[in-house]
Image (cartoon, rainbow over all chains, first blue to last red; front, side, top):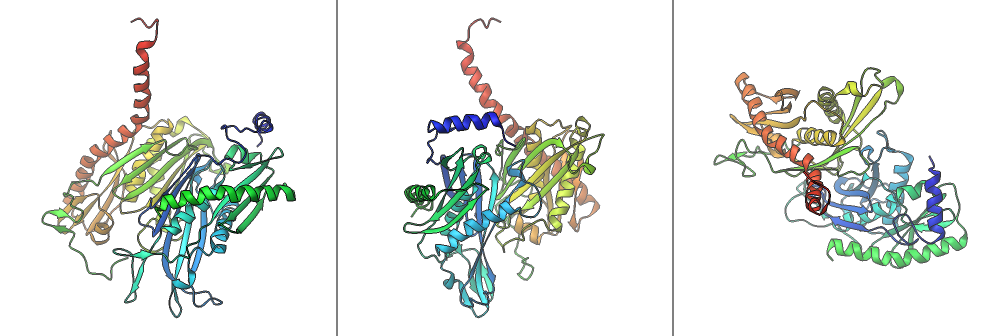
Length: 261
Length: 257
């Protein structure tokens, strides 16, 4: 449902280089990242991005390796758009939106090799599986970037259970989940009335014709996903890449601050 | 479960493993208005349980065949996050346990919400357990009741939940996870404090007739504490406003008594 009054208002603001909440086109909303919010999980993080709030929870469990990769562990990502987070989210099996969200966040983290999967090998036919669940607790747009921040922080701060005498030990003196030292963040842009804007809130998203998520680390792009029916020009994509590499410095710093390293 | 392990001693020197007395609740804190998109919401920390509850509605009941022309229908979803327990990754989606808890929770609110005020509508209750340590259904109903009240939907009472257990021959209030795993009985209850009636009652293990009666009295006694916390949580946002106007009042003119 398009609220035309509001669309006209947003369009007019954007033509003057401004937005509803006073931000410039390439500003993130205020955000906070807190690790370890759900201590029963091996890793967890809560992210508030404007009024969007998500939790990532990491569980590390015994599993078996994939046939084509017998010597390494696995990672899996899923997302729940909880009906408690928005009147538009419904109870039931994951929607295509939830599946896209989980897969895009998964791709960035997987492509950046954040988890050292070969070190998750235990013995023949026995490896560790790392499950990351993304829980959306309140929806106000840009779940991609909020979830990538939460998932990355939860994984980077996760502890590692032990496997001793055929028993999984989850408490006591535990080490850290094996990591490679890499990190990934994402920036999601929308095209609203012909303007490229970063970090759309829910209202802006409802008027976006196209959306692009770019996940990157310090050096390279790790994952991208274009969404919605509109399109981007080559120049627009180049500009968004430029902004992403600039903005991601601050995002990585915030993650590092929150994990205290 | 941990049934393969040896049963730990749950009571040592008259105290429980976490140092509590037999009739002592875990620390509880409740906060309202935590989910901006919801009509009403509450976050409860009960021991190390962390639970979010939200209420949406009343809205048109959909699909239409679920509507009741005489009154509102309540729909409820209780779920545990797959990362909520210290053990393995939980299954995604509701299991049989979650569906049963959703049902008995729904029935609590069918009792206390003034359904006939909103014919043809549905009211949705969502209880999401983010971290669990035993007693989540009682804590969930306690939070959902605060969420419902904070939404402004009229209720005849604000119910609270608590579980009473038996360890050996001793009745104890508010079992945590490890006590629940090894206790001799567990009896979760939800009570409407005005009449003291039982709105939810489940039990498993072994209890004598006398113990059942005692357990109900213990639950009511614990409820005095829980109800106070619920009502404080509901008042809290208004206290701020009240404070603000108290401070502003003297500067206003023409405000003669």
